[in-house]
Image 1 (cartoon, rainbow, N blue to C red):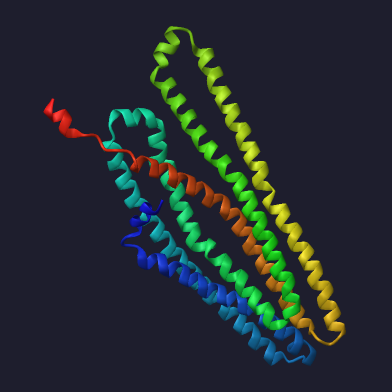
Image 2 (cartoon, rainbow, N blue to C red):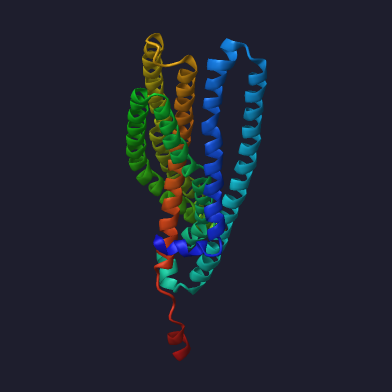
Length: 323
């Protein structure tokens, strides 16, 4: 898999600037709960309209800067992903042309077409999402934990426990779903190959009256593929409810503990609001990460399938010329 990293050549700058601008966007978002806490603790009790407008101005500035850096990060991430895929597709196409007939027959023409089109596009989407979302999630999660720790260290323990439990759930479900997606990719090749054979042999099929048999074969393959899709979808759909369950339990624990600290005079209401905002930021990022893991698993499977083609030996043209 490391051999595919060479296709980033010429796009190293974009690959670094994309995550860098995502880091800036995350920093702006992490400052917003602190401004909200200041409004709750200072502006509202003192009824200071001047301070309120000042805080609102800061929020607008952070929002504008967040949009600018987000669009910039999207631009560099997309440029790196498209450039990588273009170079990969070019060399993959040239590699397929150099394969001997035995390798083409073993891999299958339909499978090679799928790897050259669908798999390369899946890799492009995976790289783009990795630069935009996968690297953003750890920044927000660890940043929110650090900001929560600066507000109240003991309550931050709930944040750490939540992240550990959710990371474990994401790891387990991804390990279960990953082989299912690999099987679905192979079944897609089978369906495409069957359809290709039916189209090529359409006249022969009609001449021998095999229409119903071919339709039954296709329906059988399609039913098997559907059952695998349902099975994969069931396991993948468990990610959302389990994540919401863990986060909502943690939210109740934070509110309960924070209310006790407020009554004891240790924590302010604005600080509790900031802690809840940081908790919700972690929720949103982990939900995105959970969905992103599924997409990255498919990209990883596609990358392995393309790597299989590059590992094949080229056709020895010298033997053909000698004959």
